[in-house]
Image 1 (spheres, rainbow, N blue to C red):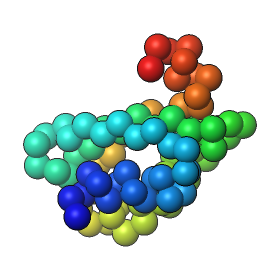
Image 2: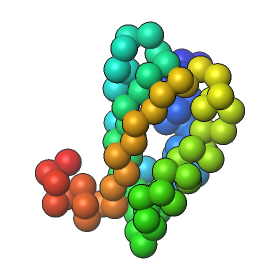
Image 3: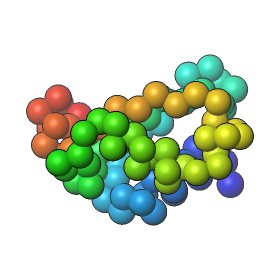
Length: 83
């Protein structure tokens, strides 16, 4: 399974309604930018949202993923930002 597919699978396992947009920033498959939209982020501070995602990714954060920038949005925030 490709790393991109595994990232999406793990995030959606933790947040079943998640819409995950990934971008490989370097073309090497180890630096990623993710925009994740989920109702599961409602009422959570940004740090708690990031911890949830990093927890879902588990050991991938210590191996194939070297860097990950996150934008975590609720559906309402996504709508307001035009996503």
